[in-house]
Length: 217
Image (cartoon, rainbow, N blue to C red):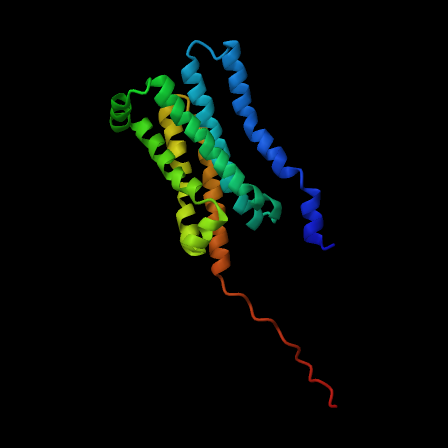
């Protein structure tokens, strides 16, 4: 058995653990809702929890590539798709809660909010960008689009994350310490991607050949 399959076998628990861990925030939210412990404004609390979880998972998915390229954590790349899909899942729940519970399915009110309130427009734009990324997350989509086009499309995940952080800033208004943390982490991830891009563009040094002459036959 080679080193790669052996390492994969040692980490066979990782994906199930991440899958289960990604469902914990939703389970905790449902338990709190059933117990009536979501506070004075349960809908707003649910919106906040779902939106924050979506942002955390999206940033975590973006961290997978720098973790491999900079830190050498090859196992991290295998979690990127799952984390990204869970981010879209929580973003969808966030949006559905807003439409269904906060606005009571009044589409005219939703349209007015999206067009007139800046922080809702920014959040909606982030959600719209995530939708095609989730839809093209399969291997078949990579083959259909071609890897170069697929990779270019999925760079929109960074734009969606930036919009998500801006949405967070506009939502809290006064105490911006928490969204500032996510902005800092996202800036570091972007810097890491720039570093990797510049590193990969540098020409590799030619392999030196031995200067000693070969002995005569």
